[in-house]
Length: 234
View (cartoon, rainbow, N blue to C red):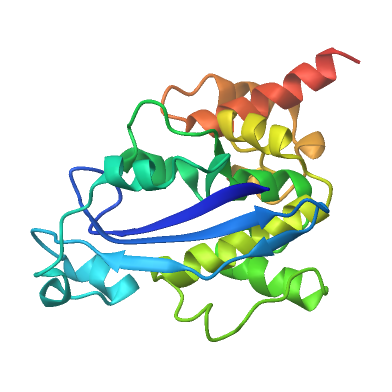
């Protein structure tokens, strides 16, 4: 039996020193017959020093709700997850900011994996993928357990089902661990006059320009360079 623990954090900001105010996790377990099953999500609040209005507006967690809770302890979370084969999150680059701990299991980013497996999805957020896959009969979950969105337990539960669908689509654990270590592979160019166009349709000069911009996001430069290398290899 193999278990992958899907985690989700609600936080008081986009990066440390902002604190984690809620932890959620949900296990995806593979039985001996190769079938995957999603468990029940677990979540708990964490004490924080402040709760800015702009983040409270997303998850609606109040400072008072967290007042009597223990502060977030990443080490304790990892120790409780020592039996799992991998840790997954829908945007692992977000969660891993609070998991700078040695010896954690391999990491899987379902967002990066979804970009590879379903490049034609209308968007690749947790909620869009949930409904898009559901409409195609590729995902089925309990509606009440998945609600409300932007809370750690329900979001981890939805991500676990997305991960299950990724396996069903043919992605392997080895694939997804490797993709997580690379920049996100964008299906289309997201900027400028070529916004929304396939990389193969973007002018070479524009791709070169992208790679030479010091302020350009690293993932965008990587995608542009990847397309240039594809053309030069022909």
